[in-house]
Image (cartoon, rainbow, N blue to C red; front, side, top):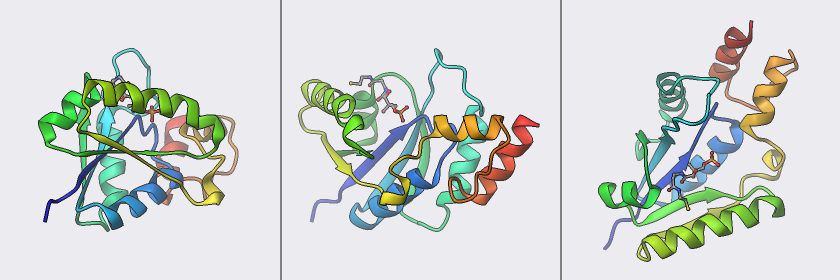
Amino acid sequence: MKKVLAIYPGSFDPVTNGHLDLIERGAKIFDRLIVSILRNFEKEPLFTLDERIEMLREVTSPWPNVEVDVFSGLLVEYARLREANVILRGIRAVSDYEYELQMAMMNRRLKPDVETVFMLPAAAYSFLSSHLVREIAQLGGPMTGLVPAAVEQRLRAKVL
Ligand code: PNS
């Protein structure tokens, strides 16, 4: 039977419990899942690429079929190189849909044989984003339940 290899792309600056929830769901239904960090030269991230790789490796270690990788350039070109047949994306609320639809349709136009699969994170994470987590950390707010403990520690150290 054909194996399904999915890519879960994103900035993961930093990985949140919402991302982790999606990774857990994806790891259950795909044979392999590659969580891939975009190397974005335009954005100034809070965490370096190496820090984001380390954090993702640490928090995804319970799933043997999950791999952490980095990509740059076109996502569909990276999917071709990795021989992936699925792009996994999470939709938290209707507000995510328009941007995600646009990306999925453009990716389909660029590479019709790669299917975008949308999954819904747990309702408890429907308001959660890396952007808000960074802001709460920078303003000294509580982060319990928003990010894994290891990420919380690193966030605290980063904004000290
Ligand atoms: O988690 P994010 O930051 O919203 O992820 C956005 C990401 C990485 C999925 C998107 O920016 C992307 O795929 N970038 C790669 C460049 C590309 O392929 N652009 C065309 C997309 S239609």
